[in-house]
Picture 1 (cartoon, each protein chain N blue to C red):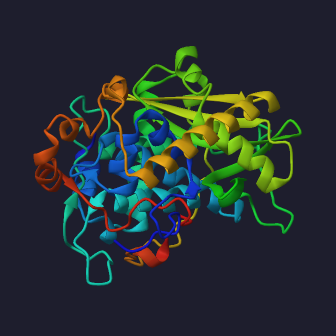
Picture 2 (tube, chains in turn red, yellow):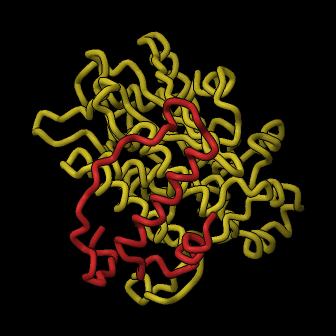
Length: 65
Length: 318
């Protein structure tokens, strides 16, 4: 597991931003394709999406969930 | 302890769920410790902790999807929620989490399978495997009022003076039939032997019976989405399980018998041990209490067990 993700896991999750969560998901997805190469585990083509929150320095809290 | 909704003024339980029926059928002493005395081991079982957060996250995922959220949006939300649920924050006087306090929950799995990292990994991988249902033919069932059939808590009449309660995470439509869906985590291999352990099953037969009552439709059975948690990976499998009307009738007779027996035991305050069940499921958590002489048992109960602030109460919706 990359140091970046380990550091994110060590942070108070109430302080994690949407970008932090996306980074965790991206890294974890990449791990699956390393471990498992069957059809179900192959990466699905994901449309590139705009990142509206980028640059907003947005922190999520419980009210966002 | 304040009066629970599932118990009458004499302390006799009249609203039952699969957990309490299982306890009563397995060992009346175990039922007494868990349901009547409200005692639980001081350290939470790693399996309950891991499985609870995992199932809750996926239940919420399908709820968000049924409300129109995209897969990525729903996944981001439930991953964040699971990260919070697996962090042991200090709480304020209203029970709210205090930012910048506490630490990650340690799962205490001697085999390092069920860890916080593996929990989040499993949620993400599950969604990658099953989250996009367009090609699977599975859709969330919608109730007659148009609401999606997710997070359905029910309390239904069963026998004289007895009601059954529970919670269906989600009801789906597949091939023209209705099924409940349930999430399971295990360290066992996902082969035929694993699924055989659910036939018969107090929990799943109750779900099937309740699904028919709640939805007024012939629910055939359920879909089990199983995740095998390994140290470095998680494997998934999906199996359908069904029960006939004859099987459900037999289940109802058995459930009724065990409930009646436990209600009589409560009225008489007699809680015999079933010593042949002490080794079930890796060992009964109350075994250490039963192993002590009755005269000193209360002392050990206070040291090794706690009374949860919110006692198990089947009639209280989640």
